[in-house]
Length: 240
Picture 1 (cartoon, one colour):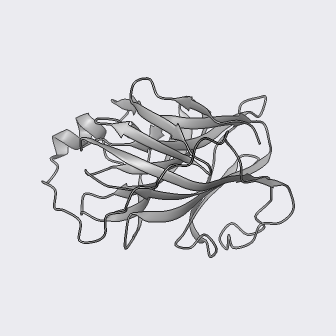
Picture 2 (tube, rainbow, N blue to C red):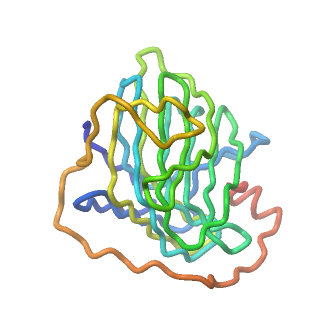
């Protein structure tokens, strides 16, 4: 599997672990292009790989110690500066973890998924040609369908996909990505998502570094946060 390359631009820190990465996002980091077209923000720390493979997926167990609304650990796919999508474990304005997806084609949409019992979930991003499917799982075995959509590729077919973290409203957050793997196996039924067939896979996508002790995951109940005004959403973050 191709190596992941870090991109931080002073927006956070990235540490590679034995089987994944720990990404810490600074305050006021986000990746969202407002639907009204007036604001765009894309300053998240990330690890990304580039590939022309027609079929590829990445899978990771994502966990976060939430400290603010919209804190998130993200899997993303990027085909052009204004053509990208992300699947995230995110802390909602209603004060609970949830699965959130965003698809951007010039501007971003936003789709909130189910409430999660704690700040840990398995996420999977899958692309076949120009069709993308998002899945999530509580145990990494039984996958639940989130959504499917299309993203046009560049003429050479190269795409970027990887891991990121964001912390728009709080003081910063740390996302842990464990058991990160890439695969070229196909998913026959996007809406089922339980089985992948054929192809090769890898469970060593990044160079191994000394093993790090994983942080503890905060259990329920989560702290209450002050309501977010419409002005703050539209200017500071534009909701994701």
